Length: 444
Image (cartoon, rainbow, N blue to C red; front, side, top):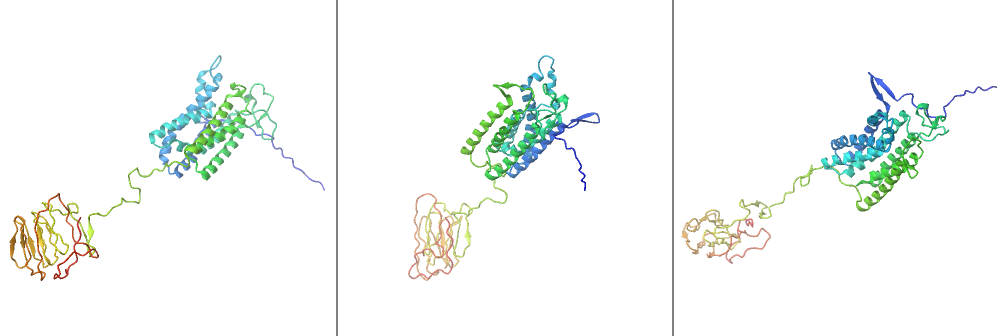
């Protein structure tokens, strides 16, 4: 029995794209630019979700990104041109090429640094904490870098040393650097960094969910995690760059930023634990939605024995013009015009309003207007001009109740009624029957 085997040829390398530019209606559409745009939108999408989840305003974050993104793109190009100046300046070079961003050449540190500057300016304008925005956007920045690295893949740039590994990246002869024309496959450093950044995104999301990183700690963790990978990936590249003390400049940058990020993370954790509040609620001093201002009962208004509150319009207190008080034996209070006190024997209320009117328990009114007149129930009129005493003839209560007059000096005093039901009873005459009406409210 014979067996038929089918040999399938599988390339032992990652092929490079056949082209990185497409023309639509005469306009060049570059894959590098599309990758950058895709990274910006992906990073903003993730950052926006995190910002809103913490209580931030989506429109505010959009305004901040309108500052951060242009600053970041310009900064990325500036960093690349400064660190690789020999590519654009010198004999046989064209400085105008430094502006051709679509040809590639963006430095991540310039993007992060200048982007942070733009975000800081926007945060000050919007009055939101900058570090809180940086924390929210940190995983999004790493996510954006993943898309950006695929732009290097389409441009066939920034690859590593030659390799024969199955995942080696095939590079076209025109893109191979000097001295490497005989090598076809190289380490795909773009892929290494993309995978590393994917791990950074996952790390940030997990740690932040577990520990609620705030005050810049999520951003500091991003910088530390990214630079830890960038240092060894950068060392694998073979493109022409400047060196310092035997190391590529980007390696030094990664090492320095790693140390600074770790220090900043530790200091922030010790001095500012927890997360800052970025919720966009009501302004300070304003009631939050669903609540109302607390209302306190009037301290000067009380209820009588029947539970009816009594409130004085002039400030919950009754004061006679001369500041004198009048108390009848049942605890009721009356104030006369000139400072005289009048009390009936039955404990009826005497109320002095504008004209110092006093009412006894039988419903007869005693009116003291200009001359402190008091009328008893028998319609006998007694006029008290300068402090004379007026007494009820005894027809109302079956007993005599003396009424003394006298001027009490002092400032305006409050008019107080008898104690409510259950309080101390007012002293009554031995032959005076108990009042048949509830005691009046106390006015303080």
